[in-house]
Image (tube, rainbow, N blue to C red; front, side, top):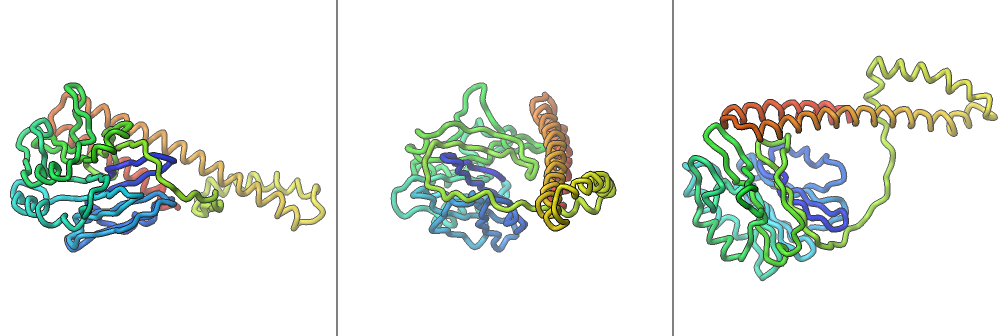
Length: 319
């Protein structure tokens, strides 16, 4: 799940937990650093192209990955969940993640799915408090990036038994002073809310050129698009008389028109997909605000997220 967003000059990172598929390497304009580990569910850091991560470390279970970005130590974790795993979770905070922590004082971000809480305001029903995590956060002198008020609480996970804020981001004092905001948003690819953190920090980033245009040839498998090409072909042929020969006509005119046709088709489909996706997200936010039972809310959220996943899966399968 998305946990952090560092923003300076269009700089961003995504920290994900419960990662099970290696296909996140296919996400455009990001470099993926993964740690699936021995338990089948892991963690990952996605860095915008041009960001250079150093000192990348992983723990064997897959429940943690860490890297350094321009002097900032970033630790992404996914702790054991459930009341029955309380002892395992305490051992995780006391022992397992130690290798990911900085060996000297440095700016730090600790984020992830902690599967426990440190405040009674962070859960309804039965909550899992962790003394080990409390000692860890205190020892590293970290601050919760979420600024909670009486009217601003954010649970990140809903179940039939209650709601909790198990997904959090902790940062050092200096980074806290650069914080521009934090918000919880709905993410279709997970049953948790995503936490977005914005920091006003400057980090050198390598910029790249625009790149090459890519034709989506899957459009050619669709009858209505083939018909669209047939309709425009005669128009293109009438321009042949303006060129000395067919080669120049093809290279200077037809190629450009083909690219324009495919680009317009792609833009139209993206617009329709975004409109439908925004409709589903609006329905999700309405469901969260409604005064209904956790079971009803959880069922509604899962149904709407499934629709968004299907919508985007169809799109990415065509790429």
